[in-house]
Length: 389
Image: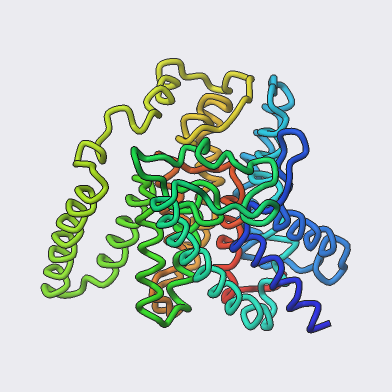
């Protein structure tokens, strides 16, 4: 049993973290090996009496805070026109099913003392792999103009030859995409997983490689996320006048280094302050026509997640969605868990806060494997504070 347990953890981490896009499509719906495995484990857990009766107080509270939006959204969707079934499937899986899966069905597995022994080594090596592979692919693309694609593994079989169509071009350069097929998706996912990785990675060199891979996504959203992490970390360390000096010095380094990097990629500060928000300005038009329940025409969730929620689910839906997205943080702070409590170099809950903030720019909420990571981290951060009920 121990062998099969480790094998399942190994396969799930490899196909969710290292090769998240590997798979095929059925119509418009992408079917990936990682999602197949995690849903299979969830189904097995649902039929396990021991696991189904295992519910921690912390996760129960988080799930309870999610339910108002989930129930409300189900009602709105039942009353809405839904032209794209693939979008609907992704929304149901990521927003409805994953909270239940990670907070409830897989809670016992995550809390198992053996879990970290199996999970952390393969997770760390998977992050190392995608960082190095991403940088190698970035350089190879510059040199040859071609991508490295392995159908069913690094790229969905139906997407072979179409990576340049996934909004990866940034002038003459192509964003670093690693095995995630899109620079923004890679960067957003790494922002979510960053605290876990930094707290277990001992090599400074490998940490630098990891950060470099995120910078080379050439994604302003990802850069903002990294800056927010830096600000949170420095603020958490401010206790003396010397700490304030460190903050000012750090900001000057970021400013100087940022300008040098922009020059290197042929951009200037106008690139950072694009009045069109990277082609997203039209998504703000929903603010001119606010409704209480939405437009009852669910077609997609665009980059600015909150405007899409406002459009399709109305003002009431937006308020409930904010409660949904911040539910792990709300209960986390109720427990008054501090960095000192969990011994973390970077507190895991920061990734939830930062993801909620970058949803003002690009949340990629429907795209694999963003919400799987979001809800895994939301469940994982309560691992040390379980109270069986």
